[in-house]
Each structure stands twice: as C-alpha cells, then as structure tokens.
Image 1 (tube, rainbow, N blue to C red):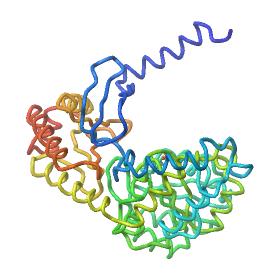
Image 2 (image 1 turned 90 degrees about the horizontal axis):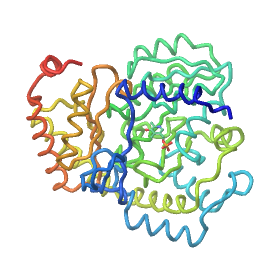
Image 3 (image 1 turned 180 degrees about the vertical axis):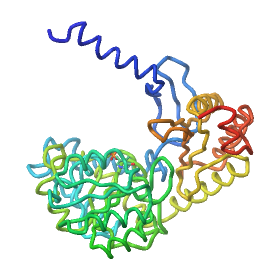
Image 4 (image 1 turned 120 degrees about the vertical axis):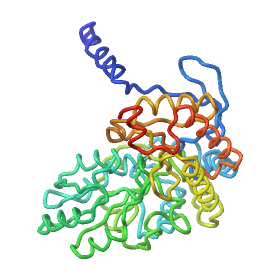
Amino acid sequence: MAYSTKEQGHLKSELDNIKKDGIFKEERIICAPQDSEIEVIFPSGTEEKNVINMCSNNYLGLSSHPEIVEAARKGLDHRGYGMSSVRFICGTQDIHKELEDKLTKFLGTEDTILFPSCMDANAGVFEAFMNEEDVMIADRLVHASIVDGMRLAKAMTDTYKHSNMDHLEKKLILHEDKRLKLIVTDGAFSMDGDLAKLDKIVELAEKYNALVFVDDSHSSGFIGKTGRGTHEHFDVVGKIDIITTTLGKALGGASGGCVSGRKEIVEMCRQKARPYLFSNSIAPVIVAASNKVIDIVSSSTERRDKLEVNTKFWRKGLIDAGFIIKDGETPIVPVMLFNAKLSQDFAKDLYSEGIYAIGFFFPVVAKGQARIRTQLSAAHDMTHLEKALAAFIKVGKKYDILNKTKEEIIGKYGN
Ligand SMILES: *Cc1c(COP(=O)(O)O)cnc(C)c1O
C-alpha cells in the first residue's frame, strides 16, 4: 500500500496548517428545506437551532417554493429520474430543449446551451471558441470558475483593475491586433455586491471591436426592471455576446448552468466544450422545475420586487444603525468589520441570537477587508428582517462598532 504513514503525514500536516491559519472550513448542517428560516446543527454536535438564514443565494425564495417542488414532482413522473448519458449521445429530452429556448427568450439572446453547472459553463466556454490568436481581458475580481476556465483556454490572458474603465481601455489598445478580444466580467460581484459597469464596457467593446462576456450568476432573475440581469439594468440587452449563469442561485437553487449568447459561440460549445461533452445531462427533475422557474420569473416581477423592498429596508436599517456597509443596490450586503477575528466572533454571536450569517476574511476577500456578508431573499418577511436587524444592533453594541469610522474600528481591533 502506497498510502503509508509517510504520505498520510504530509497531508495531515497540510490540514493542520490550514487549521493553524484559521481558514479551515467547517460546514454547518441544515436539517430542513432551504428557506428563510432553517434548522441548523454544527458537526461538533451542538443542538439543532432554528435560525433566520441571511447567507443563502435563494434570492427569489424559489428553492422550496411549493409550485417548484410540484413541477419537480411532475418532471419525475413524466420524464423519470436520470438520463444516464451526456447530451450528444442520448441525454437530450424535449424538456432540455424547452429550457434552453426559455432561457434564450428570458435573457434576450440568440441561443443557449445547458451545462451541468455554471462552473462547468465557465470551464468550457473559453476553450471552445478561442485560440492562440485571441486574448481574454478579465476584471481582476472575476469568480474563481472564470479564472479556471481561462486557464484551460489557449488564448492569452490579461486583466484590468476592478471596474477600472481607463485600465480596461489601455489593455484593449495594447491587444488591438489580436483576432478576437474578449472582455470578461461578472455582472454582480459576489463579495462586494457591486455591479460591473456594463454600459461603459459595451461602449469600449464597440470602440475597440471586442466581445463581451458576463457571468450573471448573482443577477439572473432579479437584477433589472424585469429581472433579466445586469444587461437589462444597464440597458444593453442584445449587446452582450456571451452570458453565463447558474440555475443554482435565484433560479430555483438546485443546479445547472448555461452559456447564452451569439448562436455561433453556443454552437461551438455544443461541438467542443469538454464539460458539456463529457459530463452527464442535467437530471429531468431539475430541468422540469427550472422550466417552471423561468415561467414564474418571466410572467411576474412580484418576487423580484419584494426582494428589492427587502434589500432597501435592510441597507437603510444597517446604515441608520451606524454600520459600515458596501454601497450598492444588490441584495448582497457586506457589513464591514475589517478584522478577521472580529468577523468570526461577530458571526458566532449572531448565531446565538438566531441569525445565520458568515464572516469572510482573507483570502476570500482582500486583507483587512473582513466582513459579514448578508444576502436578502424574497422569502424574508419584515418580521425576519426586523429580528435580524435587532440582533445585528445588539452584537454591534457589544463590540462597540456602531457609528464608528473604519479607522476607529481598525484602531480598536486591528486589521
Ligand atoms: C455561484 C457562481 C458560479 C458557480 O455556479 P454553479 O452553477 O454553482 O457552478 C459561477 N460564477 C459565479 C459568478 C458564481 O457566483
């Protein structure tokens, strides 16, 4: 056996180092459907606790919505459980094509291809249509799955400073002679909750003959007047060449992703994208439920509007209470604490108060930028948010960080 005490020792010491660095991730266990209120236990064996969930991507509250659950059940009855195949062999059902068409219409693009996840969409899309003659110019804060996807492609990679349009323009000039130039960005950035400046990005793309790629995972379903995404918000529908997004967040929260955009690019993905060709089809039950999700978000803005009301209430409540939050308008609301340990202690105290939120610190966010990231949902009612706000204020008072400047908080706790 090759896995002797020597090999085991190497890995054990690596794991010990992760623990020593304080970045060992312990997963909480939810003993209920995903929702605004959940039962949670820690693996270390604490008692089950009912908490208000402030850290899921269940933006529209569809994860456990009765209509979605019912649609999933029907999907199970009519199209079975598994596909046991990739799409191009015998893994494509009518409902897969239906979902691709619905997403195309919803996103306002030319065509759509499903992937097992958005991570897979991002892993496959760049390699599928770009080569050595091309360049990908990415915002420095793009999601890890985009970073990985770019690594897999043969095209040259460059970056621009986060949302810095002057820097992007310099890079576009620098790479003017390339065959294809692709600007790569998230639509909404998941850690700060800010939006990419898509209007400016499209302007630059037109000026320098570049294509635009947007990952709208944290926007699809709720950003923009009718929830189509950041392209709707910035009035550039039809001008984004590639949109990738996930079915694993606002759009039902199960799993699955897609590439949507120019039909030739989508076709290249169907022919060549490796996570599409070599990974199983999305299960019929998820596809059937996703079809229902798109029907719901296409026919009414009710849930998206409620989310907006909740987001405004929450942002205003935190600011009025004297917290420092990141500016913005998305339901991703980071409460800034700057110090890593403080972010962990704060989250623990919130949990004792029945509020489930997670403290993030380096390397997930920049050094000295530790925070509690809160996320709103249409599943939250005012009573949830009032209770959560009261808990934040109570814990904020305990640590004496209300109505303090960033410098005062860092002065007290370090960063
Ligand atoms: C969550 C997320 C993904 C991954 O989506 P999955 O479908 O869960 O793989 C990709 N990109 C961004 C920007 C995300 O936030």
